[in-house]
Image 1: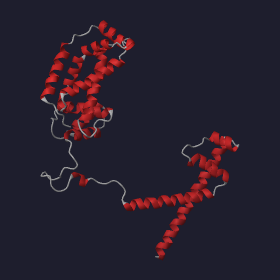
Image 2 (image 1 turned 180 degrees about the horizontal axis):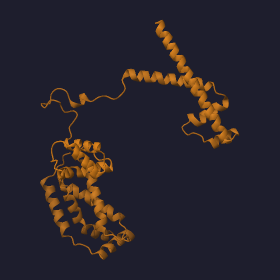
Image 3 (image 1 turned 90 degrees about the vertical axis):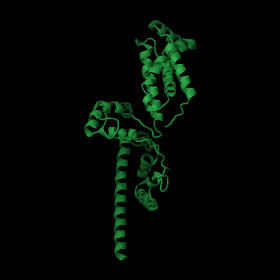
Image 4 (image 1 turned 30 degrees about the vertical axis):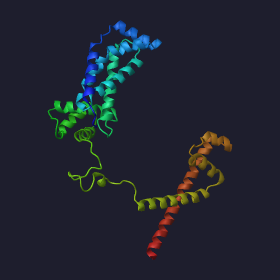
Length: 299
């Protein structure tokens, strides 16, 4: 996905980075005091000093993700969102520095932004996919697999073992990262004429004949069920309706109280009714099969 990174925006980004790197660092006691002031009294001045002191951390982490073809300014902006989230959730009473806590939030915000905008096709929907997305290039380089071409089977096995994912997941992510987004309306011919890629997509929807057959079969099944229900006595029909044919099925206890019998007796009647229904539908299926064979012979 292409982003417009103008000269003016680049200048503004550099100015912000310089200002961030000049912000004074905080001592541990001052950091905790500012965090408490924001958490307990909502002191916005304290919040501003706290996040300003660690804006350099945002810049440092954003710089590690510059190779994902997204503007540095956007990465920093998303990192600042993570920094603000960290400030809102930080507990100063825990024995941890704010910078350590904030680093996780900043990195997570930047990575989520990259995953959302790297491609128009969503990438990295699971933790394993996310780990693969951000580590596949590094690991294949470490294994001497290079940056282009397919990864060897042995290399995929090592990467899968390293990241704790399936080899199939490695292969799938390799394919996603090796191909750029392409419009389905683009022509198959490099000159743009003829068929488009969308013309070659298979339609998984059922065809007209399949729809008609399914509707007919559904109607036949409904007719068999109605006939089978008529073979039950009144109490069996009530129990089957309340227990099997309603969206909000009644419990055995509730139905037993309504009918004046124990819930165990309701369960027994229900099982007997189900056996009757199954037997009736099986019989109707056999009869339908016999009729079909007779008609086929007669025809």
